[in-house]
Length: 465
Image (cartoon, rainbow, N blue to C red):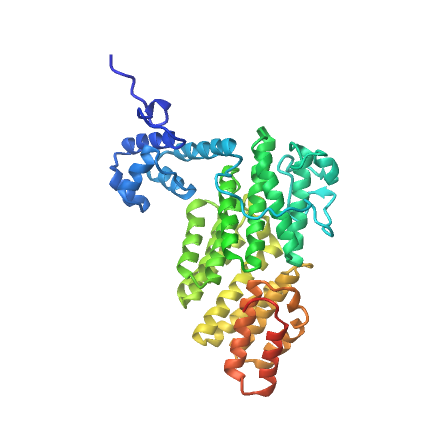
């Protein structure tokens, strides 16, 4: 009797002898490829891989990335089934190894979960952070001594109180990072991540899902805090972890934010092609999300400005601005930072940076004036408390005036920042300061007052240039 033929989504499609966590995914991929009528070489050409890589994927010898799984699902016409199989394997591996701890987690120096001087909110949501267990409710935050089991070095088992405490700590650390970046905040975030990873391995159901989502959010912040100290290698390690946990919890916002942060790090290292690639990954991962297209367009614009491609830069900026005007309730539910004034800050600050970079490279004063206008709009919309952002955008405004040939305006805008620079030694501010100082010296260095001011800028700076 002939054996029953297995379809591409039936377990029976697995070939005899296959083992390992990715064997089932590989079998389903082979089934969908057969249904589509493609050879391995044809599939490889469509997704940008060699046929040998496709063979390894189908045999279970190679693990696909989230991006590749999405692309394969699309190319093979699986209608989401292949992507679901990918997520099932990643979720199962997370349950077996403690939420993706196959590789060691960075950081995790000993210390208190809540550092001295950090004030936690008493209610959620706070600072844009809602409870993943009760997203539509206001949740009370318990004291740390009540949320964590006493006597246990790892805080014991996690429950709703623990989730509430972790959300409050995340909100407080985000606020501290925005207002005054400090090494103690980064250490607290990484300690919490180590605890979350351990708790997730033991948790089940909705609590586990909440912890996985929080792991992604904490890893995103850990990456940004490491990047703010110029530790780009460590930052990239945390951002890769963020993408892993975000994929497990279907957190599109964290996933996109991590890719955008990776694009920023590439740009700071003057690697425009990599920055463009990361922006393209955002478009490919979330093609139907308007808010994701806004962020991808801004990343692309800044990268194209870095290499002097004015046409592509302007196209990215114009597209992001147009898309921002049409974001709807669904977009803002996933990306609330694009709502109203904060959305204008996000878009116009990026536009100011991109246009200033183009103006500096091309000596086009009309571009410099556009950069000045964008920087002014970003500052006008910036809310209170964003100290580092205000200094960054003000330096960008001063540099725009320098690029436009207005020395007096550049100095008048930048001079009040001298007292604040020592407390904000971040690479982004350092890059702005380095560019402004260099342009002042190159163009007006023969003027005694200008050279003295440039020296004062350098003396006030405590970070790398």
